Image 1 (spheres, rainbow, N blue to C red):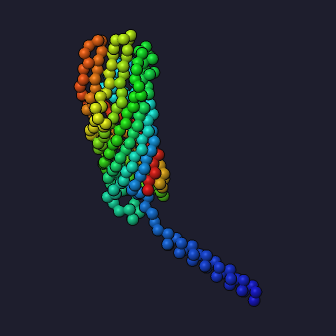
Image 2: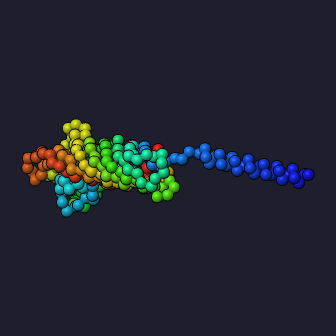
Image 3: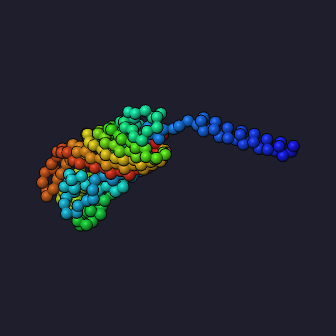
Length: 247
């Protein structure tokens, strides 16, 4: 009799445990891996390395701003075209990076001047930009919470430069080149951005490369001649490597 009672208790206990497990599985809602909001932060590299064989003006006109590793922070949202409640491998939508902020110290010029044997007065050169990006994104969910995103976006950016390369020989100005900003973010324009994100769940890594030719005001004085001012389109090329938090 005791053995029968023990067997009955074990059977009922096992049934209750399995029933609880089933209820838990059914009650647990499925969560789409195609998340929409994101925050990304990381490093930003502006332009290429300086070429000591050419002048400061030629370097900047080629997009070489003498930038070390800068920093970037951005917020955005993905608007998916396909529903997120149904399980699927592929999805597509619009990726709107609402605001992407970047700060770049232009700290490679002292080394450039040293290699050219030039005595320069530069102050603290820097570059700051604020960019909005919008364009199509394709997302792939090959397994579990793993998602790969590829995007192409048009950009609109505002740029601010604090830069002057001033070479002084004795009391005479021998060479001076600078980027003129009469007002903050005076240099602005359109460009393009391509990027990709690899993430698992809410955490991942993102890489972006953007390119834009922005009208930029400058002034130049050399060889004792009169100062020349003007404006021309200069390439602003940003390479960014970021960690991504998707909500």
